[in-house]
Length: 449
Ligand code: B12
Ligand code: SF4
Image 1: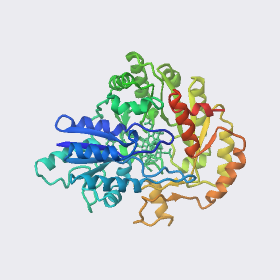
Image 2 (image 1 turned 30 degrees about the vertical axis):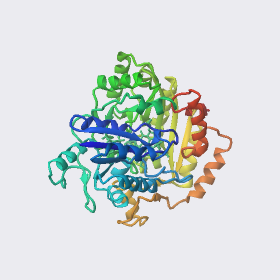
Image 3 (image 1 turned 90 degrees about the vertical axis):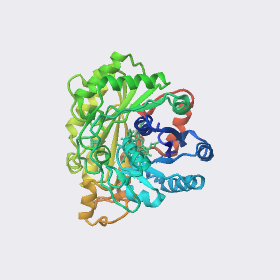
Image 4 (image 1 turned 180 degrees about the vertical axis):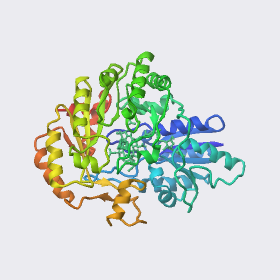
């Protein structure tokens, strides 16, 4: 079949993100189908898509839906309207069926099927599109295939695929150039799945609880291929790169053995590290650590079901600094258990962290399939059948958002390394300017104080 895959993400905040998921979908389809990818980030408008639809007459069009909204209560932005317009544009140029997939879609499959009037959807790993196409080609009924959702039907998240994922690194300049010229960042996975159970988090739903590790030598071969394709910085998109410390060390060793020379960064959980852990990663090129810290009050960390406490955060922070790596912490204020006292404790503990940048998000987005969702229903904050596609944020009874922000701002005064939300348009503009001048990577290190 002729398959056209469209990456619908156009958000450039904090920076434009290479549509990694589609490399995996391409790899799963390419032996049996003619596959073409169009990345709307890299196109000036949707005209290019209209041209491709006319020129290639695809048999099926896949839309990759990553972001639903920016989860930022201080500067909220939603993208579902854009996706509805995109689906309508595709429909106006072709009668080919539309299939939806992506991490955003996996959180809200039924809602997006209805909104975009799609023909099919794939919940979870997009490699499963291969089985759907086979069923369509052979005239078989795809209902009941794992991960496949049809209009007006519900479908559960399937068991994750057994094998570690295999990717087709797309080294074609037409695909990578956009990112190479703007910050030089490309991305890769070293495993799928997160074993932790933080109450608000969708990652275990999207990727599963069981870690599926990619062989370190293969991760390194991918990293090298990306470097050869022009990448000047790599982001490892694992839920938490250090969730399996021995595996992450083996990946770092494999980077060194393969001769990778470009810097890289990843998300980490601030758990107590193994001795010499960050030194070994730094020796293999790790330059940026993004800690999903969320709070610095043990009562709140416990309520959020975080797998660490303040003492661990401090030890992870110090170990990372000692290894010479740039460190950022992400905070999620106002969730269950937050009070004026816990907030004061968090702010005072953050203030004691040296040489860092802190990104504050206020209010927890309630997602289906999370413990927070069940808690919010129990507490009467949402209704069981409530549509959450339009963001709903959990708010602690003890304080409203305004009171939280007043308290934070009182302490934040004069602290240039305390950033609210993703930083909004200002950060996006500064980053774009620096990236076009040749600076590489996420660049938040310039905010470190
Ligand atoms: C890494 C990451 C980041 C990094 C990316 C760094 C980089 N250079 O790549 C950073 C920190 C920059 C980031 C930023 C943001 N992120 Co983010 N991020 C992720 C994360 C953890 C992994 C994404 C990833 O690369 N996965 C690996 C690839 C291989 O998987 P995939 O893309 O999902 O693709 C698979 C399937 O989805 C499917 N698939 C994909 N496309 C298609 C298409 C078809 C047709 C089919 C059938 C299947 C299919 O097949 C693929 C292979 O199995 C996800 C959570 C998660 N675990 O998924 C959140 C996630 C995508 N982010 C999210 C958000 C909100 C954001 C931000 C808006 C946050 C903010 N306010 O700044 C920004 C937006 C950035 C941008 N410009 O788009 C949300 C999106 C949901 C939502 N609420 O909208 C997620 C899901 C997390 C969450 N809160 O639930 N993010
Ligand atoms: S460790 Fe990170 S990815 Fe894993 S469940 Fe907690 S917040 Fe989510």
